[in-house]
Length: 94
Image 1 (spheres, rainbow, N blue to C red):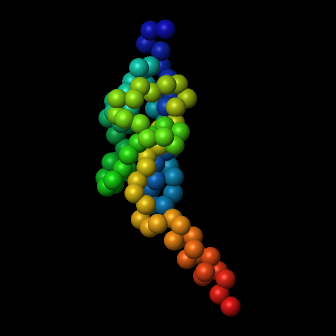
Image 2 (cartoon, rainbow, N blue to C red):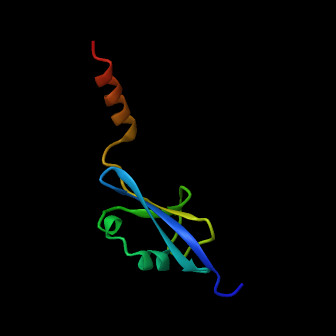
Image 3 (cartoon, rainbow, N blue to C red):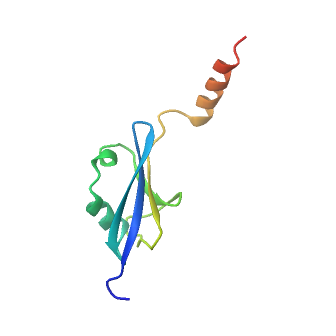
């Protein structure tokens, strides 16, 4: 089908919460083209970000497919394992 339109969702962190947006694009659109179209300042200002589809990091030339879910990954502010241990210790004080 020529000029088929597909809907793509993007999920990104904002203030320790996950937000999402949807955009209808042409079939054959690359990840970088999609990011240019969506123009979401919320995640473009973050340092150390990468993008993926369903939890797997993808290059900017990845061609999006119908039902893909684009995700924004950012550097963790702390080591998740250490953060969990700290929370457990705080909740189990005698």
